Length: 346
Image (cartoon, rainbow, N blue to C red; front, side, top):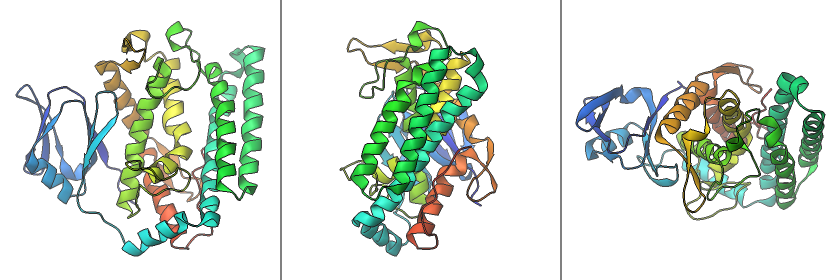
């Protein structure tokens, strides 16, 4: 089993990263703030104006450690990585299946089914843990959404057309996000959720979700590249220049556990408050630096949790799940499995 490596997140404006032997050294205003051995890292993610020496870039590329450069609020800017790895025959098969309607629908059906069932798990956990404290209207809404997601998952398993599957996913997303306010138990008006907004996020919950989704996409892309797949050629998400479509595909089934549940925990446990967010003149809501650091710590801690993988029946860390799913995708593409087994969260 692959070792669970850490991700180094650098958020302090003006930080400077350099190589010292086999270590990454982080300096802020000339003072050393951290030192991490390269062999313990799976990636480095820099937010905002961060400097990286050419020597460190080359060393990380040589050792398979990707450096991702993001804007202050998580928008993707660039990546520094080594030569493309993987078997060219594997990628050729990936491209062939992506161009084959029947094969694409088979993969998309499993991805969508996994996503819908995992969204249902978010709702079921809320009902299990807090149902007695909810109003009758909230319980009714959540149970109705649970039924809709169950029905949509059943339909997705029988559907053989990719466009129809995308439609089922869209209908289910409406049912899921419509009851999202009932999952929020923090009564602070700042955390009132009125619907999904992305570019830009218009409230703290959407800002938090978008930030966590950005982190998850990075992990999924790295996992796919590590097993030799092309993250740009997906099945559920259509090809678009600059879009990591396969990474977005892989993220779909993982979003409920990695991001949605974590966002709700941070809000409901009052680990975040209104003062952790700010609103620009345009209405866009962003996180303050200290809040971003707190979220990164919570995300990394979540990745260290242990879980039994539902398909492999083996104990692993949450952080390894994207890599495991990427390997299962490879096993399917190489015809060692009859179908791609999505991750089903219990």
